[in-house]
Image: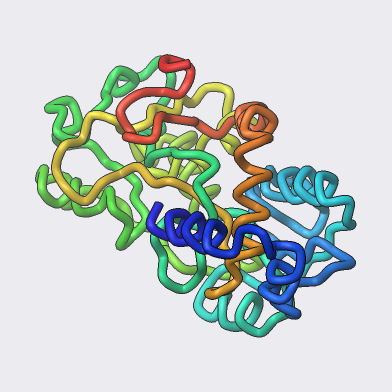
Length: 278
């Protein structure tokens, strides 16, 4: 919100000469002939080179609103992703980026989601909504090492039997989340703690017996919900405001794309599913 407030102030100061100043403020690095997207080539359900992810669909939607074709710069979303794509001026926007990260200039957020507990729909953990639930004692839970749910597992004495999965990987060669879901399906673990926008679509696509429960009842840090923005280069305020305007005017269509993909959408405070407050 601070970035948006500064943008509003800047816009009011330049009111009356926007026709010339606005053009001067637009970075020459932002393409005027294509919607240039920085993306992972093998990161379903978000993106892949075949255009099958929901971030691919969002990219196509935004490009259509701008009247531009989509052009991708592919790079694994691991160490060096921003440095070798956005900062290298090979692309102009990252479709999904957590709010508040200083490596990029965030747009306004366009959805909020949370980490989720994935279980068998007919299993003994299907009604668990918090990691402090006594029904989790003695269970084997899959968790991405170093992710926020791992801290909650440690606090609740659940790490001894937990099975860790790698955090930063090149998805062209390693797929820890699909591996975790396969282990859950095979009975090797009792539950899986996964970022909801990954868990929801994957379960919807290939695991009809599994259930995704967003963890909205946790009150202790670290928080398990995050607001997701688009990321642009630092200083590119005009481009940021242009994307903010598109987000504001097309929030309904954005929600529809995400919901159809299976992304669990929650309110901005991380306390309830989005449909409960509409």
